[in-house]
Image 1 (tube, rainbow, N blue to C red):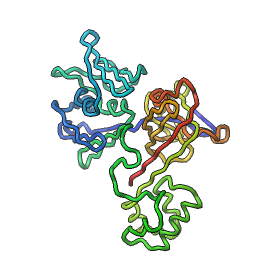
Image 2: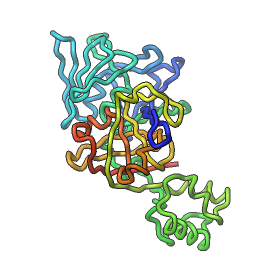
Image 3: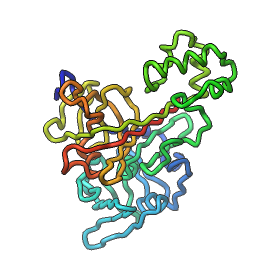
Image 4: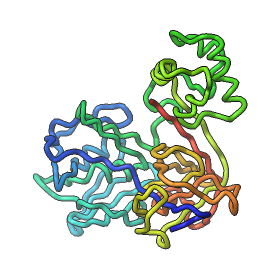
Length: 314
């Protein structure tokens, strides 16, 4: 699967919880709010399954059950999720999404994979084994302050903002801003190391006190079946059913909120490949998996104007 000399891929950031961890001991946060379950989550084949009604009710979705087809439905805003019991192909707005562990019906409750539940909302999941906490960030979460942090946005900071950081000298602060003005906005913490006067000690201080926030607008595109199952630039397997994307320069694992300006719909994707080809398509700024493209209504058009919003916290 090659595009402009590089292999292109998409793979959604997946939640992997060790089977040795009891599901009932895991704390689940949705956009920073602790999610309480009436019935404890279950572990199935190494995956966590959560009560569907509890999960979607927490994000103000309406949940219904069709006993004839043994299918659970969740509707929130313009999003409709359909989950047949025992099927590994639930749908999101009519689009099939492959899952490795199907929904099950137990104790009069429908249990669904936590990863799929977050993915259906256009969000991502991060699991911290040290604290036993699964953090889910939905597409509706605030982009400019996803962690409600007071850290300084290094891409908008003025000299006096940086001087509020303990140990920051005026010469170093001025050089950080000058580098940004000359080379463009910082897109990764590693780029801060390119500032000559930033020592390793100062870099450690900066990563505790700053964050990276920037946006980008341009043309978005998508790809799917032709590349499904092939290896990508980073050696992963492209799965067109997962919410991922290729970007020309963003670091691997960057989470990006993509908004299709025609519909106003947004989806969170994980960048894990290079593309689109800037030689043939310099106007294109991101290449989405077809599943991500479907959720925002881009697929029928092929190309469309999109806005990217990125927040990176160290």
